[in-house]
Image (cartoon, rainbow, N blue to C red; front, side, top):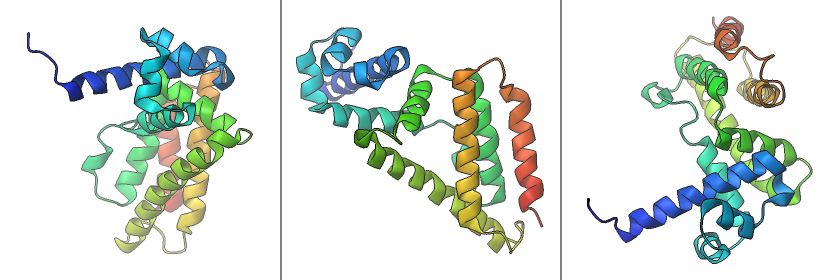
Length: 197
């Protein structure tokens, strides 16, 4: 068995720490997530958490970034436009069917960001990045002639983001109520009909 490089060991440790942070957020909320508890949960000391992240804020940022990357697998194969936008909508709702601890932590932190100053800017930036990609898809769809020209890309982006996050929170709070397999097609079809020429 080959020995891990220093970079591989570092990545493995950071992944374990972020996963531990997500578990604590889901189990007990943000306020109970301390660097010491994260280290203990991951099987390390608090010192290793400080070494890798330095602050709770840096760890929260790593957690927020880790949860969003790859949430909708395969979407990168689409060019910007209506097909990619619909793939994002359908994929996002579908991914909620088997929601991971890290994704659940993201949604809980997102909800808490409206009243927690240490999260507000971080999640505002994450949401703006998401809206920006959605806007780009609407604008590309208009340019390619598949989306109605009277559609306001900013309004669509705000509405889709709100809808997806809202469905996500409902899935976290009442998992038996949200049939993601059925709903993914319903929501994508609603947007297809609302946007198509």
